[in-house]
Length: 74
Image 1 (cartoon, rainbow, N blue to C red):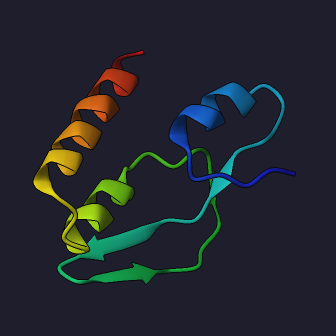
Image 2 (cartoon, rainbow, N blue to C red):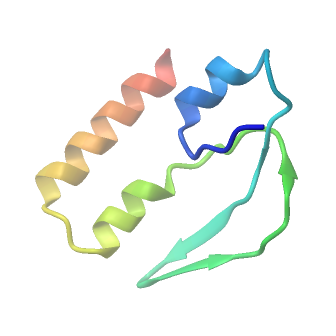
């Protein structure tokens, strides 16, 4: 068994494990979970939204977005 929120790590584990995830909804200043186990890998990058919600510097958010776009292409 393994647990991760790292989308890239799930790609490495896909041949070794069945993938499941929990998802959340990030909006305004809150994070809401439905606590429903879903099959497959997580497809969203809510961590970047949480950075913005917690008022991280825009340069960090922009860099995270740029890195995620590169990772999504590979």
